[in-house]
Image (cartoon, rainbow, N blue to C red; front, side, top):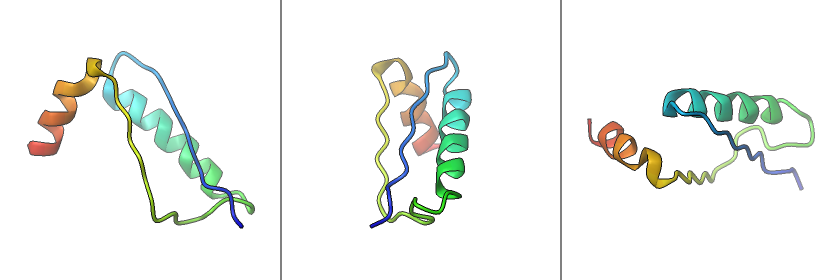
Length: 59
């Protein structure tokens, strides 16, 4: 069974936090023992970015 990639990041700007997470995920997905195209994803954000997430998803 291949490993599921996972990542986390903190940054005061949500776009930078997201970019850091994506870089980690892409690096893991390139490894031979990790899934290259996982079919499940989970995003957890704190209340600090809640208004940005709602605006980004709706806009």
